[in-house]
Length: 408
Image 1 (spheres, rainbow, N blue to C red):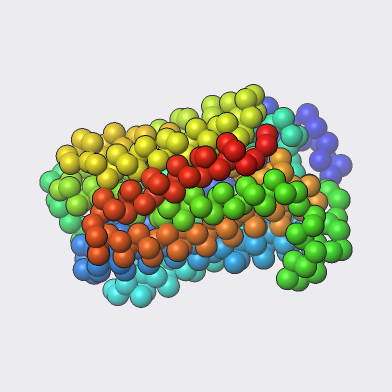
Image 2 (cartoon, rainbow, N blue to C red; image 1 turned 135 degrees about the vertical axis):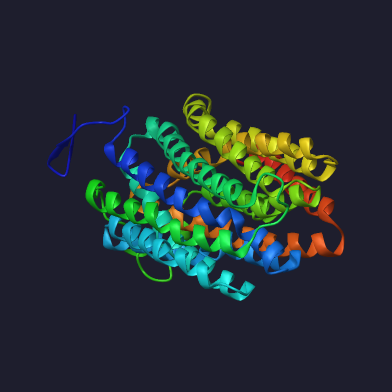
């Protein structure tokens, strides 16, 4: 048992209950998201006949349009001293936005819905991560963020399983292309788990008392913040920028690579299921390893694996090669996602964690947005292999950077 805001609360799986219930919220939200969003690059290509440059733009916006909102929401959560209200608002906006994909019959409509969803993600992500960090001790960070990523990705796995079943029952195992009717049905169905997620967050997650941020950190637009973070924090963000410029919207390009090699639609979706299954199983152990051996070493290992995997996507010539690449990509995300968030908590003072996560997500989002545009154009002009070689090269540079420039 532990005290929080004067109320005694029982730990769940050895961690503060906020960690579990925010993980459960993320799980249900990812069920909702993966039921429909995994199909977007296929919908754009198969149904709306959009070129890869447009797929790359939508993918980049899908991953990066929330960058500005993440840094503002993180800063604002530090200013007002509250995290939960922003998390609830963000999850709510995303839940309302998704069903409008039913009406999207041009790529601009898909882009608009994805932007609205990412607006919600931008509002919630930094405050949610900061609230997780506020709820735990320093020696629990890897485990807590690893558990959160494991639950989040379990939701993605379950959402994809639902999508696979719907596609299989509606189109059969050998269908090569998606249909508008199947996509529209999933757009309606995805609202149900999203609503449940918002309700659980509102009822079971609670604010944590903490020190207020210094006055210099709460003046908009973040004047005075630079001197309040360590040099290690800024160097880490610079290295993240290099990596994420090459990471692009990975699911979009990897999915289209599988279709490019002739994989049936059902097989493509099962590859993404495999990716999420590996990710979910490995996320918590990797977080625990980072608590024991240090974040920097684990991050370097993750970026090395990513470099090898993206080279594998470039070199793939048969469908089974892509199956292996998707599984290895799951290992990378298990290593990198939770551990990088824990490293941000290591590098930032508690009263500025909202701002720190905002800056972290902003850098990641802007670079993935740019990477999606670059990757789509490179795919159309040069070929898919060049897109993946570009990502592999930048991941390798990031690995060298964190080993040589960032101290543990």
